[in-house]
Image (cartoon, helix red, strand yellow):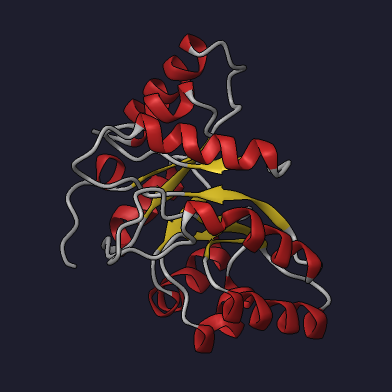
Length: 217
């Protein structure tokens, strides 16, 4: 697969869903990819990337940002509170807001800096004990808490269980978003993003199908 092949699939999915071309943003998830593969995608003009770890992003992106204009970075992996300061300085969006302590830390940093990345609440739609995210039943209350802190809440994110049909999870995320007035829906990966587009995704996250198989972790 390649960047162009994924973009072609994405445009076809938008058309099939009756959505305007370019409605859905493609996040190229570059975690643990070698720099030369990331550079090749940058050379093709793509500018929206996702990383799982703050430390990896810090080691990779400053050099690329000095050489390529317009790069936008989204943190799509779990965020520890002690890495929050580095994250708000590095990323344009944090998609893994999932607990009150982290929200409080981000609110404090936002006040200090006078700015904050766009935030997505991660919802554990499959209520999997090993997975991060707010449980669906607690999502409305948590969203209200985040809004009370005056944080820039852009939407919701989910990672459905790997062995289940993703469609009910995408529908659930869309329902939570709709009743809370949140239009941003980050959902769908390499194997299921067409389904996510049909169900209202605004961001899809694709990694190895763009870059090739990951070399580690």
